[in-house]
Image 1 (tube, rainbow, N blue to C red):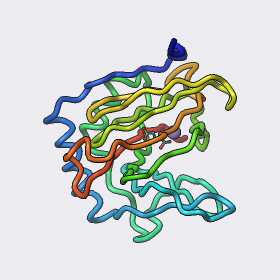
Image 2 (cartoon, rainbow, N blue to C red):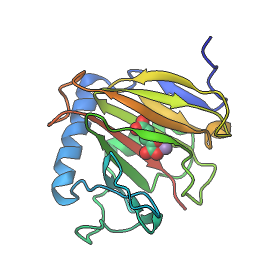
Image 3 (cartoon, helix red, strand yellow):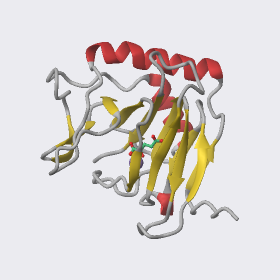
Image 4 (cartoon, protein in one colour):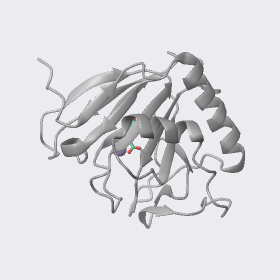
Length: 202
Ligand SMILES: O=C(O)CCC(=O)C(=O)O
Ligand SMILES: [Mn+2]
């Protein structure tokens, strides 16, 4: 039997309709012209991540050999990140159940073969604020565990337009992306999956 979802975790399949998630992909396309996708690196080893990243909002999450950090500018262009799109702020207000707005929205682009190991989102000082994430494009296999790395996990598929909230007691649960089902959507130009992850940082 599948593990039950931890308290505070919400999985909202099909939260965005096709028009809404198509329009978000258009927004990402526009934004990455000025804040191009870049490949982050694992701290210490410098191993390149299998995802490409960019950000919206006053702060952006960057993975570098020197460590994970939030910064105000794009590491390639040294320009501030593009503003958080109003439709993302509206979605946050509708689902986050939190009074502060998110300061960062990480844009992850998973092309064929990309994955994200089991981890906790732990680089934020606002440790209780929820994390809200939106799936766009190809389907992905999401793995959700508990508060300890060795806790049992459950896996389920995320599709374009699905929203996931790591809130309340689930905020520090381990999670990751085991695989992308390449070619299950044609929405993302050049293919793949885009995930938008909104966080309150400070
Ligand atoms: O791609 C996803 O659905 C999850 C992304 C994530 O957990 C992260 O960027 O920290
Ligand atoms: Mn995460």
